Image (cartoon, rainbow, N blue to C red; front, side, top):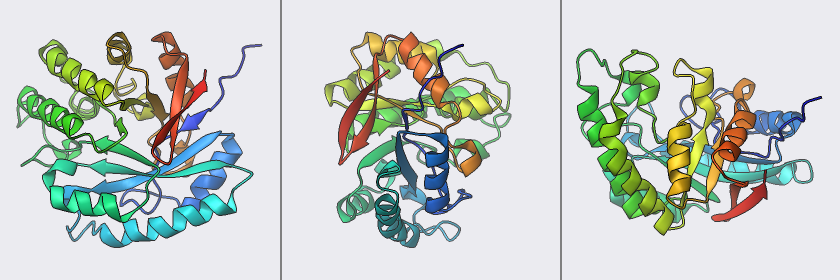
Length: 273
């Protein structure tokens, strides 16, 4: 009988405290317990450039999360090792606001993400028959490099996020060799600052069919000396929690990693795989 891969950690998930989340913090925590996830982190959205948009209005949900998540952590103690995190989107778009939000809450874990580049909408909403994806990818990787140099987060989220839509939904082939140099710079900058990358497994249940980033880039990160890898399902509902985590852990192992990480009080904690 094949040995089952442990669901060591799911370090990326969303609740109804995110605009696109479907389940409460308690429901997500109970599902994590049901699945046997050993280390679980809630990372609801905080999109800096959308903070005051009428359809988002992040101030109140973020404040509520700072109360709700620690409360559920206390309630599930002994049954679940749960942590309070955030997915910080577009932090460079309003640095004053970013600094305020980082100093106002005691996050245990911060994922740094870029869902849209300055002056453009989220990659999810763009029509790639109307815009040049290579041009946008150039802007994207330059902004991610700038984020890495800024460095006020712990792990870089879903490095190849735009490909979920460009390749997965639109079926456009992309010459990624154009971006090898800047991606190497991104990784080298993260490594120098003792920051990590995540293996985001949401792509495995979407049209793109691979993790973000995929094996090529996880191997590149390892080759450059990277050590800190987290794995996250990026679940927005209880049904998707933990999905692909076993595959993400197996990918890390295939690429030469013998441990993955989760974060407690902004410190990386390793677990052997």
